[in-house]
Length: 234
Image: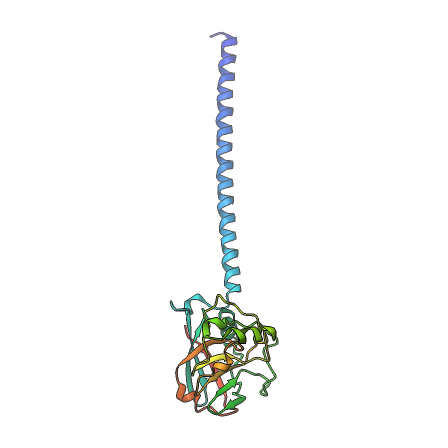
């Protein structure tokens, strides 16, 4: 084989090797990019997962299929069992659950008791003027609980802002509702209706659950009786 022919063959082999190397480098680069992309997706998913967990005050495991959260309020007179309605008042329920899990209610009193009407608690000051240090908006759909249009207009003129997408609960016997000082002044104080329905409160206070067991205990509560502990049942 002549020298010229050998040189051509060598160059052909070199070009083939160079092309193979390029293919291998490209394949490695694609593999690295794929791994990086998958890793980025996993990191984003984890961040979103933790962010969602932080923003959602309630563990999904404690919400049953009917959007109800079971709560046990331990008092010196006995236990009161409640169901909080996440569908009726999501932010209000979130707030109550967070405060309960933080131990906020433990040791507080029922500072206001009106016979045949309601018992009220959740005030760290013990005199009806305290709260958690913040206030949040009402969650009420007055149309869903039978408030007439004229009353709705009057309440709106006073500053109440309603959410007509909610399925609100009425102030029936056993209802647990937010005490407030006017529109959008909810904090930690709540009350439970004891004897008769109180429809005149509809449209002004957010009902977020009801007593499912222990109404006899509710009716035994006297002013300054202590809330030992509020337990969110899981």
